[in-house]
Image 1 (cartoon, rainbow, N blue to C red):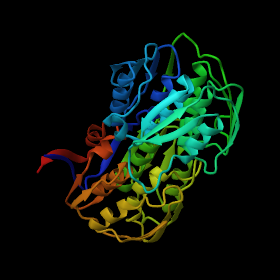
Image 2: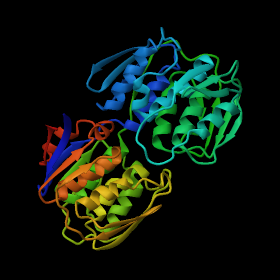
Image 3: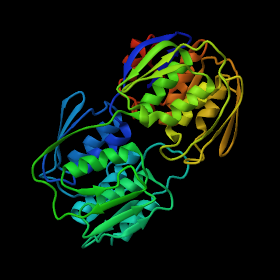
Length: 423
């Protein structure tokens, strides 16, 4: 039996939805906690399956982890053991690769099998590995596992050929204990990196330049032996997804617990296509639209540009714009599987990698579709809310990896949304 999501489309949304803590921060913050030698309490943890997988990995490392309440984790690494990470939990999420930097930094040794996660075309970790090598680590690949070792990590100047979030975070974590200064040039500037660096600095690391393309890490001999607390930033991708849902089919909807600065590229694009909104200090209010949506062009870019994770749900909205929109993907050039699923629902999208040509306005009809990855799932939820009839989404585990309490949040807004077991 498989669990599917069913959505009866056409019901107008209204009300207020509160955004959870950042998934992309959380999946790096949890591995970052093992760098320390004292308990850490993290607030604002989203209730998603990736967190459960990471908790499983912590316990395998003999790290004590307790869920204090729905949004709070207590992590105590004082008795952790550095063992090879080869369990199935590693394969469940791509973010398990953050244990490479954390374990290499703390113990000078890490063994981990190839991480899992959504398949979005080639997603090599060569930049991570080059960064580790620049710090003095040797790397071998045996029986499906990466083995990283360094008798001593030495700070170095590292230039990233691509402004990679994962590589920036992983190298930063490894460099915390490296001798001397590490400088990461062309570092990613995403808010999640600032969030992880902020926690590490609370723990006693010396990291400067967060939010710029030059990240400086001065190695320390040890981190603090007293614990600390940290609250995760709001999830800008979840926020953008609900904002897009509101733009698609809400009469009046408030998305609260957001940092509007993190959403500027998306909000500007929504205004460009004709969405009426009010932006407050920690909320965005979307008003029901009374005009035809205009087509546009989207080019995904590293932060502060248009986020690749938002491209897929935004494409679903563009099926309702009058004319041809062009979506060009520069981060993951094969991130267009959602287009084929949307076409099953009546969309007219011509994919010519690395672009998708969205011809609108088209009527969407509910049918059986597959969430091929996390943000594809988000796009199908957006489409299902707009479609006539019932949409049945399969492989919903992808959606549950990144959206906290999706069912209740949508139902509270007026969506007709439920789950069923099917053969």
